[in-house]
Length: 440
Ligand SMILES: Cc1ncc(COP(=O)(O)O)c(C=O)c1O
Image 1: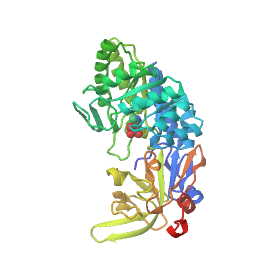
Image 2: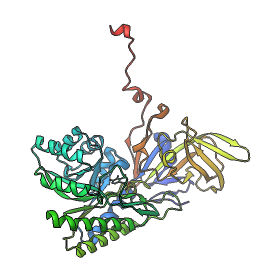
Image 3: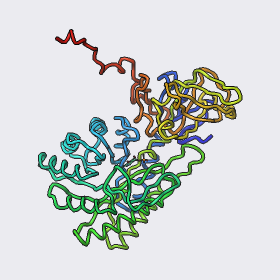
Image 4: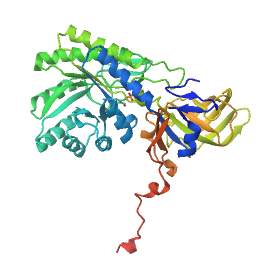
């Protein structure tokens, strides 16, 4: 079994993370429990930044907080000198509450409301990543109302789509995000933005996919964007100060996954940007990136308690845990695969096939099919690895299951950073029904 970051077996044969025995964490905080290995988050942040520093390239590494937004995680991002990508009023609110420097906040989204745009301007966020024509007019209105000039990036779809090992190039991107680079919409958007004194167009943004294992897609995207930028310079005299190549760097959920080290993605990007800048005689722009999953994904482990078991003779053993698609919807949503181990039996050979079921009322609520575990019994602790990205942030209350607590561990210390939801929390927005008669 492949252990990430500071995870290891301790002398008691238990899973330890950040120097803490996870069976002790289960006793202290209960289960299910999300545990974050903060040393690993810091290591990732530093690797991305170091690759730019070594190449002496001006850069911003923005944590895509959609992967896991909480006050404490935003504070870690701040400590590590990252920038922050937010996609909603709620993520922006969290960033502000965490005291994140607003000039390093980038505001994304394909349907930002006027109120959200206005909120972003009130907080003087560093830039708004403009996604569509409706937003250009809404943002111009908001900018006038606030008496501010807004720094913007234009989100384009470059016709490169990357997923894990595959990437495809398409003439025209069929995507809900951004302006298409090839059908003239991106150029029209650039023209509109450049024509208005409400905007300061910093440059271009693209995001080509997720869980990407090689750098080819980023290089292709840079090639396509620079070719257009060269045309736009002819027409409008525009030179970009910033090129944001998005996030999507892969992590190792299972042994089949083989991502590049963070610095390698960056090296390829830098090379592609420099080559293109040279080819078209542009100044090398600042390069911004937006890793989410690769900063927090494999730093997260979810600890569950095993309860019931169902053996279908000759077919399968179902082992059920006290969570499921309410705390990790990814397997049900897009057949995401995970590895796991029994945290209190790490030394036992994991060689018996089982399938891990959640406790929610959906047949699709299966966390892992056909995994090798030791013989398990009720009360054992199942640790599912790599749940740090899009786990808590996609958690929900289906079946009125309270969301788990979140704990950070680092250097032998643990701290609660999100409390476990209570049943009272679950009904705190509910109002009692009043009959029509009572209302009269
Ligand atoms: C615009 C943008 N940037 C960054 C990210 C982060 O991607 P990842 O978590 O795969 O790094 C996403 C993910 O959806 C995104 O849409």
